[in-house]
Length: 210
Image (cartoon, rainbow, N blue to C red):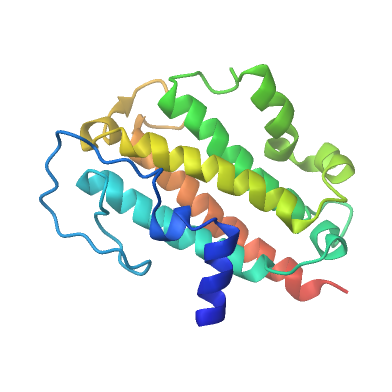
């Protein structure tokens, strides 16, 4: 367990697990719920309003679960494709960073889905779409290449979430493309459960690497 925790602290640059100077307090908003800094505590976190902190606790826990099985993977393992229609582990890690970045742009900047700045479109659109283009282009990168993107995107999420409150989290988007109106909480919970889905795929592919 100690070895596992040390790996996560290093790969996530401490910020996602223990908090850092980037986790700015939400000034002027009282924190009335009990908090706990344990990674295994799902609930309010210091520096966030109660519901936002609960979301952050889920994001932190799921991120450790994603990073643990990919530790020490080689470029060959990250690039491994089970068949002609499969995604690589490296491709899925980039996909997770891309998904979170695009949800940042949608929820923090109120951008319509697909209306991305050129820089973000260039960096993340291939990872978001995967498919044939992803298989052709997302390869040859060491693990640190993917960790840098995951950590950079996550640090920005934590900074921005610390600036927002529970009212923002519950704000409804009536024009969202799903079958029913949703809110920012549901969008960000989707970021969490999306990592959970790919966690299972990553573990399955890892078990089949030859």
